[in-house]
Image: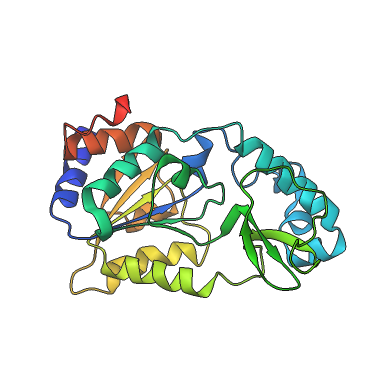
Amino acid sequence: MNESIERAAEALRNAKRVAVLTGAGVSAESGVPTFRASDGLWEGHRIEDVATPTGFARDPELVWKFYNARRANVATVTPNPGHLALVKLEEHFGDRFTLVTQNVDGLHQQAGSRNVLEIHGSLRETRCLGCAKVEHRGLEVLEDRPVCPHCGGWLRPNIVWFHEMLPEKIWTDAQYAAGLCDVLLVVGTSAMVYPAASLIPIAKSTRDRGATIIECNLTPTAASREADIGLYGPSGETLPGLLDSLNPQSAIRNR
């Protein structure tokens, strides 16, 4: 592990631009349930019932109860050392750093990250089916079928569900960041969900020399075959360790 961390730190020292792709594993270390269990259910619900436009049209109250429960859970957790290490990494690289996340819980921003692209939307936002207005609602308790205060239309979670396209501008910015970076960190994601996982081959192939891919996961995953360096273990440990090697004065663990 020490050798891998040193190699990863060296890659970061030589990098002009850095991008990060994060997934559910980062939030899981804060106590946010991961995407779905081995039985295919998502917190006891079928994916089709709570994470598709069809499911919402069929039973919007069920969908809102599900998302209100998720919002309530997120309200009880806090960012972990992995989130905080990524804040420090952004401080190191400034505007040459982009964090692309598949997570919808907003913990990266709560930790202090600024240049965050939420490609799957935000649990803290609503979108009106009438006027299309998107509003940040934090983690306040919402009705089981809330209505838009502007036009009276029905509100839905501003989440990208199955069978929906990613938000065009955010996804374009994510691809651009992957294509320009010298290092791409893949953190807490198995790289099985597309199109998010396509950022890895984009980073490796769209420059004269491909970006260095650093994987930070509990165990090897589908991303491992594309990774140049693997750091295996909780991201709340590997990322602070990486930052300590990059900059011994970063004091990630004491923040």
